[in-house]
Length: 467
Image (cartoon, rainbow, N blue to C red; front, side, top):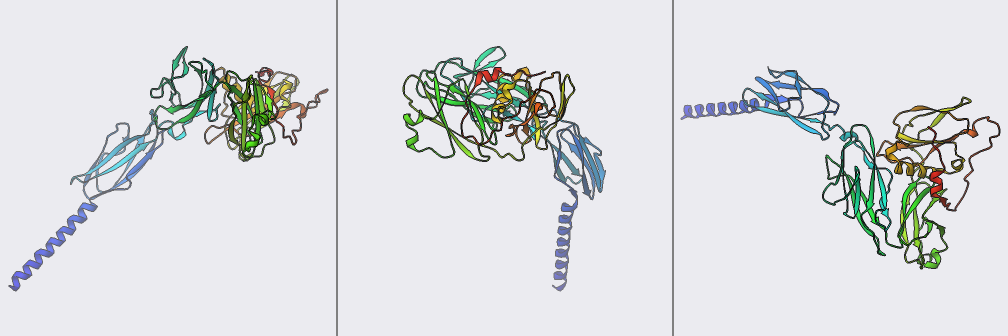
């Protein structure tokens, strides 16, 4: 009996030893140093280590991945390499390391899409809403800045110009598609109303601009066709210390009343009689306001009036930005060579690209920043396809053949997104030159609580851009 117990104990001990040995063998037969490898879109290389007690081989499901070694025994180090991708979306591949005993380890190889890490898809000429007047075929535009393919969805009462043909949009089917390359491509997309709206109430809908590689994300814009008596800000520019906007109006509107406020106006100031004491302007005027406070929310109250009494008012809310850390493109080294002016524009530390305006026209000399920014924005909006205002993505030197003093204005775009800066860099050469009989100076804006309606069409016509 004692011998039997001894033999049984020996057998049990051997069993435990074998079990532990097998467990150790299973765990230690094959290990790899990583389970995920990330490769950038432009291509690159990486290494991983294999620790194994037997022979092994390496298999990859992507022929585009180069492996320095596909088989071996014991410990080893494998280098992998991938070239630049041609795909927009990120890709995933798998490397499998297999030991002779059948144990496997997997490594996932991720390569970023060609644009996803730095994709830009934005509308640069609109805030939150696009307003059409009540007439049929009222045209407006989107300036789309993109370095990725995109699609457009919208309500059927809006048509889009696709080549030379107007096509009705659809909320469920992409009726307009555009390709792009890795460089920024600016597209001026023309939209128009399909039919007249002969109603008092506005019609509201949504417009969606989405990247073609992922239609679950993108830009959402509200669109409206205005009722007979409505008036809405159209192309608006908000700066750190001012704002400017033009107007879209309903069929019956001939006059616009508007008022700025940092507070919500009480009911006593929203009667027809009170509204008619607000600043008065016309649909063809640029309405602007200087000396606002930075980082402050403002309310822009507005109402349209035709032949009858004022029937309604609207309110738009906007916030000024900080004047610090702006995407500024400074102007420097301005030199008069007798027959020409030369100067440098460089990218500021927070600036990704910039547009510029250079003119000899005195209309602009005394205009403050919001009106100048509106003019640049409007010209970009109207003439994006003519390259009058391309985005420059590097520092450049410019020479202009003129003896007249110049006004040079630059407006920068930031690294995060593509919103234009809320400050302008402006240089008036007559302030810095010894040219005789030149007394033009920039007007001191000073404290000013007034709004300044400006003839919008004259303001647009009054400048000649010097090539």
